Amino acid sequence: MRGRSRGEDSIRRFRREQSGATAIEYALIAGLIFLALTSALALYGGSTGGLYGILSDRFVAALR
Image (cartoon, rainbow, N blue to C red; front, side):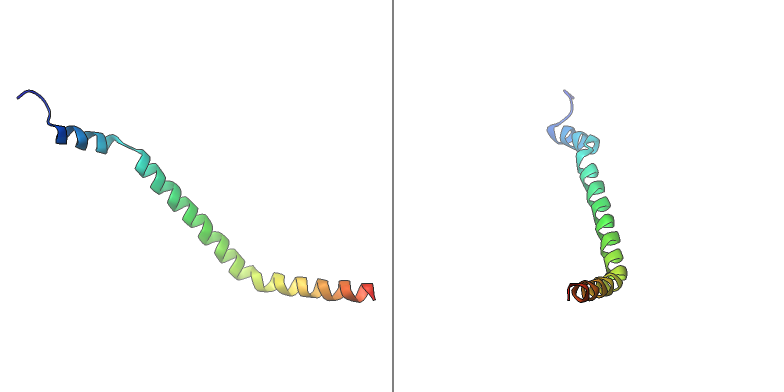
């Protein structure tokens, strides 16, 4: 046998390659951050909306 075939070399390079795994890890981290932000906004969105409504009413009343 003269050496490795072209297919064997491709498979070995594919197994050593790490950039695809890194991209997937970053995508998972970004997805978890998005999920955390969305959950936080869902939990606190209503209460902050009420707070801004109260502040707006007081500001308008102070201008009169």
